Length: 255
Image (cartoon, rainbow, N blue to C red; front, side, top):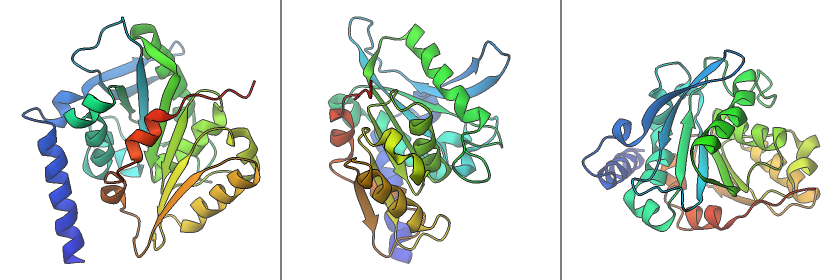
């Protein structure tokens, strides 16, 4: 146990160092999206320094876990939620895979309902946020990606099901979805992750969803970490093929 704690601390320090002298809060600008119906949503946004409208860029949507809920526009990129965000915006990753990264923050309502799968009003507002960003930046419509952990893992499956033709790929971590609706997103490349001893979200949730996707004709990837619980973020960010696989995917429309 002590070895794993030091391992996670070392990795956090390594990724934080990769950001250079700037803090995560400086690298990801704080904004608030105001919808036409009066609703609003805090979000953090990363845009490469050399961004120019002459070239389309991929967009990565990060959906935080339950601990990121609130209105401070910080918790969605702090703690465990920071691992994947730091990876995406690190200079090394950006040099290989330049992209725009957006990390919205949900209210206490969260991304999914009490059943852990039904999209909330918060999640349904996220596509509007993405449309807003696409009116401001030149984003490649065929290279939008979504990834999320824990509650955000459920949110990843939920938003894919809600908008099956919006994203080129999804990476749900410690989540789950609606197996009966797997056919709606079987065409979307998905790489799911889970720990086989997850004490928060039963590993069965990922196993069942992956099996349903495969049965529906999909070809999901699935990585299950042996003897690991819920906090697997430090392992996911060290997957050597993670970003290469994600950015290689191009949106596949169902119609």
